[in-house]
Length: 226
Image 1 (tube, rainbow, N blue to C red):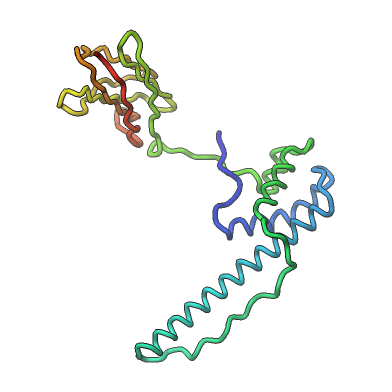
Image 2: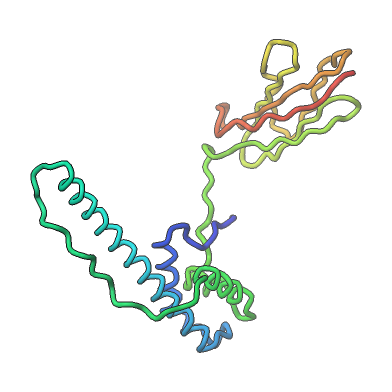
């Protein structure tokens, strides 16, 4: 089963991964051919990024207090809290060069190409993403089109669906109409082609246990006739 990307999207998640690696990677330093300098750099990055996040959070919270105080001073009202104090920032971390996350990504890439690296190590270091769990609600057909002997042919990956509905708009003023329901992975539209050129459109949706599931595909166009 496919896996999601290991790197969290939010800063808090990135900081947690850095800190986890800084704690756990020394145990695999020899196995994964990681130097003491690599470990020291990782630990410094983890501390510096956590400090930057904590400082930012503190300053932003303090800024909200000062904004409320400023608005009260300007507009009047009942004062509930005293004048805010300046923020108390955490103890400064060691200074590091910019690019903490790019360094983390480069390090993880090295770890995964080490001769003795394996999935068990990857899971322990949390550098393997969780498995993707795609439900039928997420299914969306991707249609591919071509013309064979002048007839439109629509193809798609079946996946785990029981069948697929193909709908066609044959440029006759009637809009989209059901063309077929099939359990296969391709459909040839044998409808009579117009004498003059036209563009037929197709869209599809998967079916599971005789019910539509997921999302409609994007529309695809096929030139016919002429």
